[in-house]
Length: 378
Image (cartoon, rainbow, N blue to C red; front, top):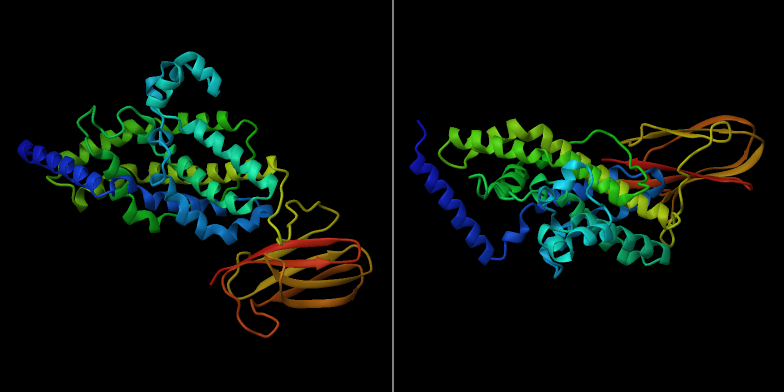
């Protein structure tokens, strides 16, 4: 039979640990691994036209945790959605002014503002892109990822955010950090692509509605694992993962796709601009007019490129980096109408191997320019 004296000691030890973490300025760092993981994964879900985010993947990942140490208020990171009965009735206003009119700003701040923070940051990112302030774009994009990640962690959506109301005290850290961090490198997501959000604030509340039910699942899993072991050891976390692994992976995947959709929406609303020096990639190739096929893509040793000339023309075919700098010429001359294929083995014009990353196959004629993104993985 489980020793409830041991359970009390375990709970007391957790409380003591949390207190020590607060005084050593580590408390705010819970979940950093997951935040960086989400921002990194979101780049994979962007449409081909936003390939230039690849060059800033590391920055977006590293700075995903900046909001945990900046001076912005803590209520930016959550919303206790279960405080609002209208949420469950489907009548909760989504607009800032609608909520102000119903509850007032003081109550909203007490219960958390993360949906509107996401909306504000998205608007800021749109303005920065439109104005060409790309250095600031990357910082805002990274911070957006943090808040999107927060709002996909179910415990950031509940009054019982740390199990303090249900005898599950300390579950917040156990779930989002101790259970998650050792398993992040084992997680992979299915392929999916960002969507344009007509109403970002409505889309945020849509995913909050989907994520919130995980709160009860987390508490129930903690109860089961807690009864089975006398300490928060490997057995405890293995049982938690057995219960929650699938839903946790789903919530992380949802976060990365939703973040990509937010970045994409900001970019479209800004007029789909490109940073200085970046060569744009056509997002859609119209069937019957022109098509470039690349396979495999991503590739490791060699990529085959196939294209069709619709008329006799002079053309140059090159590989460039994402800043438009020549990596290697592939072919140049007169081409007759018909289908062509060639290969690139991931080397420069001097025969040196290039590093992993995104490259561009550029086909240029006097009348047209076509670009295909290629991803080299080593």
